[in-house]
Length: 100
Image (cartoon, rainbow, N blue to C red; front, side, top):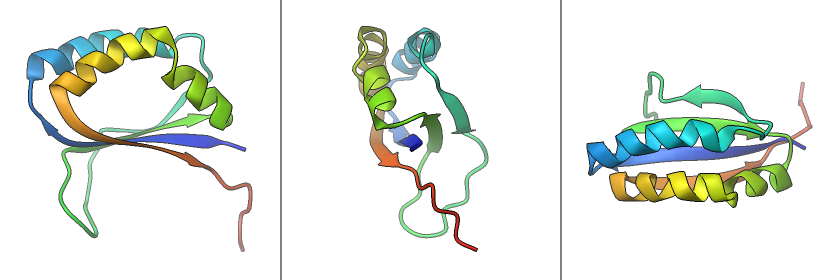
């Protein structure tokens, strides 16, 4: 069953670190079956607090998402994301049920 990693960026605190993250994160996706579902596009907050941006990545399953997240390449890139911005990061299992 598909799994989704959802990045919720609350605010940027160090643009230089975010630039480093933007340079290192693509290489961390190499070799992993990842699809960009949404990537910091136009955002309308319908409920709750405003946020700076959202990205959603789709993986074949939860194990594949964990394998990417825990990979040395992503952990290296992650350091820059954590220094550069305040984020919430979620991993949610998709649903194969498609109600009518």
